[in-house]
Image (cartoon, rainbow, N blue to C red; front, top):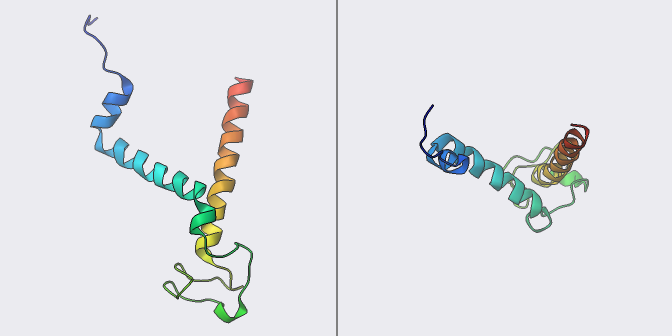
Length: 98
């Protein structure tokens, strides 16, 4: 058995490019979820029948609109919050139960 000091886990992770990239992507996703009120231009359920199936890049609709004329980017950003809360609740229950 080695008697040398152990490298802290976070230092080993910082040396791994894949771990850094993955952590960066997750931080961007969670940050965009927290900033949804500032980033989303429309309500996720607001319909604009004039924009039905609008392609990506349409002014005011960065990712386009769906078949009901709802902004896809707004729906995506609002769903991040729902998914994050669900994940935190699931993790909390798993930790509590053991």
